[in-house]
Image 1 (cartoon, rainbow, N blue to C red):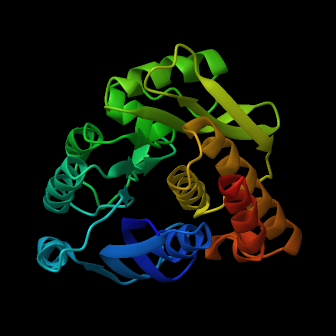
Image 2 (cartoon, rainbow, N blue to C red; image 1 turned 30 degrees about the horizontal axis):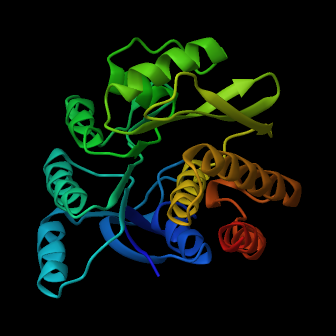
Image 3 (cartoon, rainbow, N blue to C red; image 1 turned 30 degrees about the vertical axis):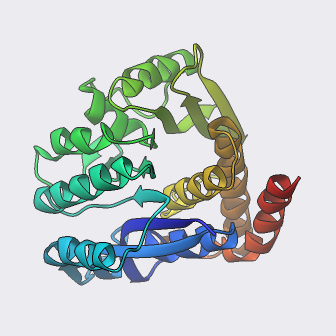
Length: 282
């Protein structure tokens, strides 16, 4: 069984980050070890009054302990990183694991809706660009893509031609494939992908629901990571991730649940695991 190291924050309530990554990656047949970047009472998407504890001081010590034990990882999958100092520690871990032959997946969680997250300093995107340089796959949203490429943010509604142009710029930031999330086509929402050697981008879409759904990006990137580790091509993994995320959003909206507390991804895990694992076995 392959082993992935998931470097994300963890919220006690509100399904996102590690409480999403760990069960999804496990359901896809990969062991998921965790390095928490911060502990929160809830996530920050529309929930106020949350507690926050930065775990930067623990990162290097935890990784050093695993190295001393001879623990090896087949992949690194990062999400929210809460400071420049922590980002530097994660970059060192990424470089070490890449030298070992591990797949490096970076979800540069730092901004949305044209704005950098409030806890992050203005220089954070430059530091994140350095981490993305060590990646095999990056999965920014449209705001994060503008920050990584130094382009002016022009809003969320971009054409496929604009999205493809952004993907080529993103591929210059990393050593591998670029995935751009939050791309719209009419009443559909999806993602574009540009492989390392691809001449054209490919897009995958699914029907969109109205509203905002915190944690959807974490569901997407976790499925993508798990699917790639099970042998799926990056293009097929993006299709898997778009489809599953859309199913979760639809199920959550139909139930009338408060979307601030996360998507109903649990109800679809068994079917997702069977689908990906059956494809792998075939």
